[in-house]
Length: 70
Image (cartoon, rainbow, N blue to C red; front, top):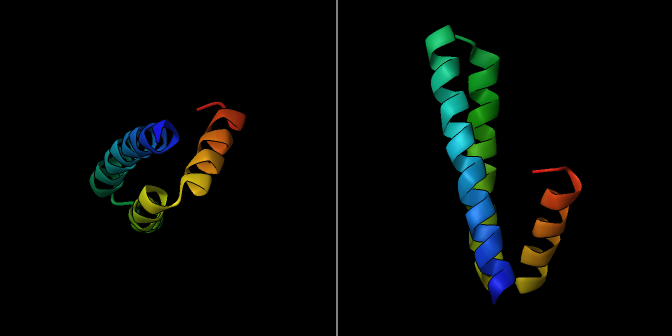
């Protein structure tokens, strides 16, 4: 249960960062960065629904976050 909560919180932090990147891309008028940020946000939203129902996926997500130093 706690793995899913941790994964949800980590995903929320990642989404907050990506929203900041999206705003920076809009200000700098960088189309490629904007498209990448939008794609990542949409993937995170689909991942969020999968994490809630699959504790194994949540555990793997948390391990990947730790492995990459986030």
